[in-house]
Amino acid sequence: MEQVVNEIIKYIQQKTDKFYDVVVGCDSSSGSDPLFPVAIVVLRKGEGGRFFLRRIHFGEQEQKKFKNWRMRILQEVVLSCDLALYLREELDRKTKALKRMPNWEFRYIHADVGENGATKDMIREVVGLIKGNGFEPKIKPESFVASGVADKYC
Image (cartoon, rainbow, N blue to C red; front, top):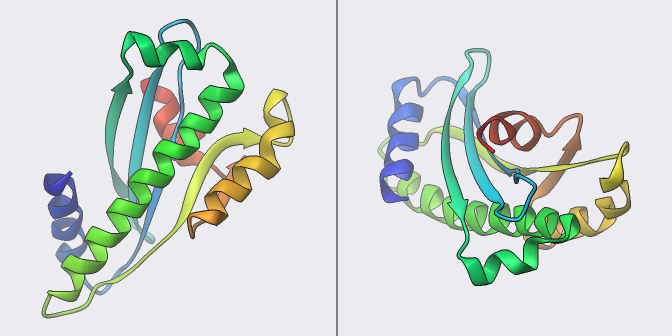
């Protein structure tokens, strides 16, 4: 993770006059052996961005709790929140040590839930979990980090 944080700092320092948005999101594959790709996206406003991905595979004992799709969705959000909390703290610490303070923000976590489909009943729970960790939630169709980037690596 330290290497990822350093890469994000390096990317931001390439063009310090730009504004950067850091966003985290996660998805999961279905089935008896789910995979959880967690994505970090760093958007350079008006110029695209860069992403980092880690695919998490749980051990056999832990997989048993993911038989239920609701538990997988909650695990996606927990993984996103854990990563976002760590990442925000590290980025805060490292950017304060820079000579020129970059213009960046880290406030969103994207969740793979939406008003349509089976996940609509989980929106309040997911939104509450994200807000409880100090971030603003984005759900489908705005949650492109979870439902777009991470989804491609399930």
